[in-house]
Length: 461
Ligand code: ADP
Ligand code: MG
Image (cartoon, rainbow, N blue to C red; front, side, top):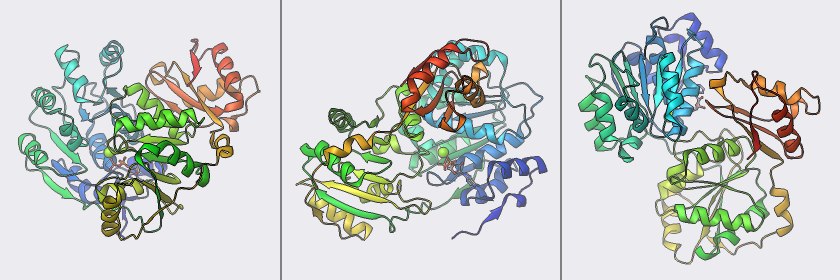
């Protein structure tokens, strides 16, 4: 165990310390403890730490602390590889920015119309969180002024380089003051990260927290014989016999994700699919539905699942066995977290014997592929979620808060507050989970009641 370090050891104001306590952050994570003393002094950072280690706060805190709320200009830019991550980062920054308050955070990502973004920029912002492609679009249109930026963050820099954003990064960096703090965060440390750092940082302090493999020793591991062509049947058999509340089902390719999703649907089993070729909006909605419990099962590639802040699931199902044992470990790390029971089940094809051996040796297991259980068809119905998500066509930009949605839904007294599930408010849309049996009525109620004085569109997704 690492020793816990209090935020009080940092040069932070009483207000920010109280804010952190109210968020529920009691002590620093390792990467935070190792980097914040430097970054809060204004030093450049080249930081590496695994996913889930708390990197957002490690760059978010210095960024917020440096801001001058009274100066109405863009003072910080955070570059993220995907819109989902940008959204998660913006949400976390909003919490940190409650102190000093009155800080405007704007996210600029692709997959959304650019017009409203231009409008928001005209109103001014202190912090921009965005994807490189869209930031470049704004620079080309001259709708974004980066000349006053004093803190620049590369978040998940390794992934941005993987995704081929180097040219965009060069273009963006060309429009920024040289006199700034540059914080570079990455989960891994490939060579091109060093090159990026050399080019854009000044005497960075290097902080590296060795990635600890997730502790998967408390998880129950099992394997079943299942040919690749039987993946759908195998998945059905596992889910209907284990009956997990939630599961991530990993496939090695996008194609098999799609195929498996379709096949499960043909059995009456709903699972969300998540991979890199999907439209951002669809990815967002799948993730929202999975995290609010409307979708109990998520079929994903490793790349799509990486970096996502998803709660621990009951079951990790390897519909296809990975060739790399480290990937097996990372997949399994999605279950059994935070002291919860977890299990990992793998479908092992006729040609996967070698892969299974490799995993056994590397992870210290002695898994043998047993004969597949039979699908319990009668159980399929019990695997349905009893929630439904409703999408509402208004969001933060329309000044919508979760309370407005609760207010509208409960106004007729047919739906009680405690029946309403998770609410997610994004810039232009909101999502609310409600019991399946009340979903149609909830849609009608929302359509009849204006939100913030304007009629909103609502539909089940
Ligand atoms: P990373 O960017 O390294 O993948 P995140 O910044 O997304 O990690 O943080 C992972 C989770 O840990 C988030 O849910 C975040 O709210 C939580 N977290 C971060 N810092 C702390 C802390 N000091 N104490 C408790 N929880 C924290
Ligand atoms: Mg992160």
